Structures are given as structure tokens and as C-alpha cells.
Length: 188
Image 1: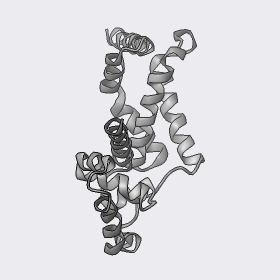
Image 2: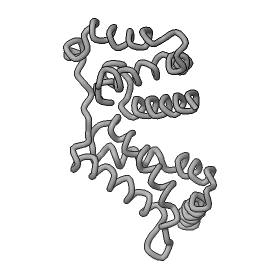
Image 3: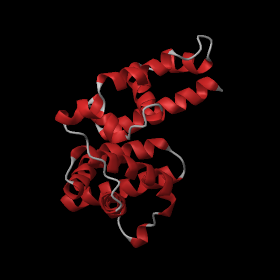
Image 4: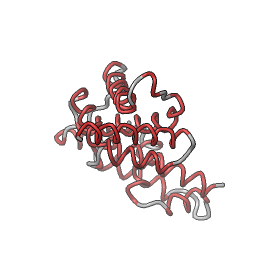
């Protein structure tokens, strides 16, 4: 009986990948709901950091979404295919040296002293009062606005911003990306 349950789960994963290949987002959501915890554990065993593992899994799910049409059941199980994507993403993160370390608390002030932070935030206030960019930046929540200004005015990396704002690296990248998309829409 247990073998039948496992086989049904594996068949459901394959069906969900097929749904992704057709552009059905609910298939990706079902994969995420059922597999994200296990995949996070796989990534964390490889990269040895929870925040980096979260980023790896996020990138892997983007890859699963865009590459679901490449999965063929005759070459292996859906779970094996998904796990291989996460494993390869994690190994590439280590190999490529893209792993950004969060800055230790005792170095935060040296990284971004108060004057530097004030200068970055003041750049937004110095924009012309009638500037569309100023209005669009003002429409963002404060954390996203800070992240964008720190990256594009202050020149800080995502890891440095994550350390300064004390949020996970993957969250930082997502907020900046979403903030930029909102800015583009607002400016259009």
C-alpha cells in the first residue's frame, strides 16, 4: 500500500511539471508546497547557510518554471529532476564564488556609518519636488526604497544591504527586484 502512495506522489509531481510546461502557475505552487522544505534541506547541506540555501531554492524554482518543458519521465523521476536542479544550483553557487556573506554586526558601522547612510537617503530628498522619480520612489515602502537607494546610489552589494537591514539575502534581492519593477511601472 505504501508503494502505491509514493507512486501517486511521484505521478503528481510529473503532472505538476507538465502543468508548469503549459504555463499553469498552480502546478508550480503545488510543487513548491510539497517539495520546498525538502529542497531547502538539500541546498542547506551543500551551501551550509540557511540564507544562501533559500536563495538557491528560489533560483531553482525559477529554473523549474522556465525549464519544465524539458522534463521527460523516461529519463528519470520528477523528484530526481527537481532535486538535481537544486543540487546543481547549490554547487554552482559555491563554485562560482557568487555566495555573498552577510556582514558581521561588529563591522556594520564601519561598512555604512551614519553619515554615509544619511547621504544616501538625502539623495532621494534632493530630487526636484515635481520629479516623477521622487514620486515613484516615495510610493515604495521604506525598506524597498532604502534597498534600492543603497544599491544604486551607495553602490552596496546585495549582501551588504542584507547585513545592514538585517534581512535575509534572498529577501533583499527580491525586494530590490520588485521595487525596480514597481519603479518601471510607475515611471511608464
